[in-house]
Length: 314
Image 1 (cartoon, helix red, strand yellow):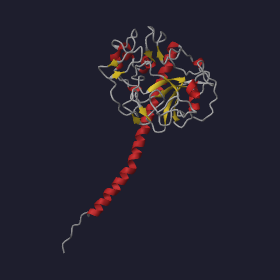
Image 2 (cartoon, one colour):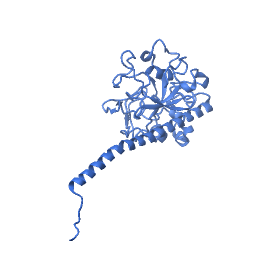
Image 3 (cartoon, rainbow, N blue to C red):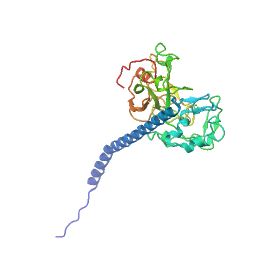
Image 4 (tube, rainbow, N blue to C red):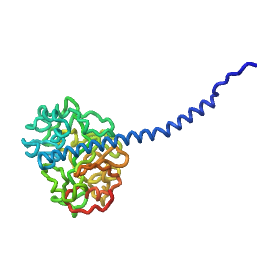
């Protein structure tokens, strides 16, 4: 008798395909999780480099950089509108970019617009998805509305100026104790941080701006006039708190604006990580803070001299 050659039956083939599909389905989340873990680690490393640059600026000028200048000060001799990222360029190995920047002009004037289009990889968190090119900006006086020939270079990291007393606690916070390390026109020294450098946040993630997100949903119909690029001097913000869906901001804890991060990205702490965001502290360490942190504890960490006792393990 001759041998009968037997191949796979259709049923067997379908079973194999089903098994492979199940295995791929089980493996894919693990691969995606590993990739995000690597991106988050890179984001943390970049935050540490920013902390080192800020400390080097402080060593050179004896004060921390202001979040944004509107008057003359260290790194801004002409008193123009200049942001903190511009002033630390020499300390992140971007001296050549710094030399191109004209300190006698506001950031949106003259050749500074071209400098602003230079992408600075350190300012971009790899977890942030690709965003539409920034080719224009709405007016924010004295800055007029702008149209750019080349897209602005983005930034996913921002100075936290402090807290908004009316949004967080108007009894606990006021005009004298509401600020963090880097705020508008500030000239703070290490000794200004009486709450402790290891318990004072100075930089947070603010991913995706100026695109507007509510939770993880991109909202192209909404506009944002701050954080339009790494050169923007008006991008820093204070902690307000948001509603869980991100639709409301600064309406007070009692009224439901009790979320500290990742609810909305226009001028509140926000990342594209799954469970929290990276915070850079005044002592230079970077910590991944869980998004379940209470708004009151986050506020305590965002002031440098309010005399709080941190009541929660953050």
